[in-house]
Length: 155
Image (cartoon, rainbow, N blue to C red):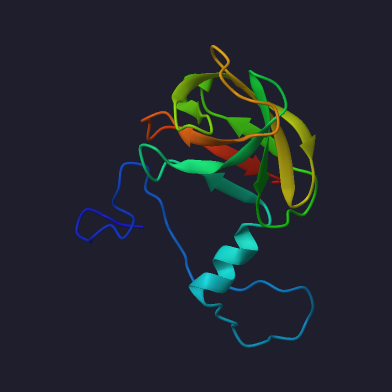
C-alpha cells in the first residue's frame, strides 16, 4: 500500500492493515451500524472467557468450607458461559489458604470438583493441615500477582 514516493499506511513490521467499526450481516438488506457501549460488549465477551485474579498480591478468591484438616470446598462464581467451560489454574504455589484463625499456609493442590455454566467447585488442599472440618477458610493469592483462574468456553 505504498511506493517509494508515498507514505506506507500499513508501516509496521508485519504491514498489518486494521479496520474498526465494521458490522457484517447475512442477507441483501443493509442495516445501520449498531455501536454497543463498552460495558455491554464486555458482558457479551464474558460469555466466552473470564480471567479471575492477578489484581493484588493477596487477591481473595473466596471463602471455602473445610471438610477435613487439610481440604476445603471453594465455590467460584462467574458470568454465565455459552457451554460448560474449561478451567485453568496458574501454579499451585501462587495460592494460599488461611484458616479460621488467620494463619496462612501454602496450597498444595487446587482441584476442579464440579463445573457448571455459572459456577465451579474446587477442592483446596492446604499444606500441613490446620483446618477444622466445618470451619471457614480463605483462599488467597500467595503474595503473587501471577495467580489466576481462567474460565474459557471459547469456540
